[in-house]
Image (cartoon, rainbow, N blue to C red; front, side, top):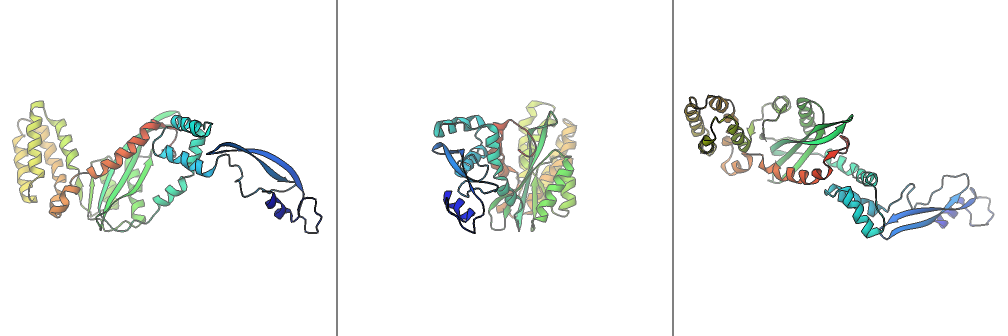
Length: 324
């Protein structure tokens, strides 16, 4: 740092030269938190100049590697309370929640690059939504988290994008789907999703003409809400499985019509619901047999959702939308 000061001044200590650009002005102590604990450095000062040695970043109080480690712990789902304990044991001091937040903010640039990357061709597009608690204007609100994953032409799975917003459902879905399209998403043969609020309208507007497969697992679960007697649930489940496991679209249609008529008297609301909804779960029968197992439900997204849940339950309530 002293050598850098001499280069900046164009003169060594006590040396008189015509090129001199200023004068040394002693030293100022600065404590930096490192993996070896706290270390106090004497930073060379220069009178009437903004000189600062490149060996230490201006304003930096923690070593870069340590800061990145703090951010990584937080992203992996370690609570700030546990991070404080870890740093106290390893480094002999504790960090505050705001320090951890500042450290994780350094990853924003990396995240932004990932969010804006080109997508290319995707054969099957999976869409799902979940909710997180976030504080907004003194109130705790449900923040919608939209997730898109896809299966590429090569058969590889990939998380395509994640979006968070407190806006209306349809507007949020439309903005999210439009952003995927702008990033070069093309070649989609089928969209697999559940019946989320606002998704259908947004999907038709942005991806009009691309068929949709409603998640068969969620359809079977939803059907249970229309059963008048609990004893009927087992029988109903078997009937719906027979429809979904049909060898082709024609047979599935026949089974569906039979089931609608079967429950028309004993469970009229269920019969009407089946007529209006179950056909949306049969689109998969228009696709190759070897692909049907992976595109009949949104189960491929469950792994992603579990990983998100494992991390976000540590935060419980996010202080704002940006932090989520």
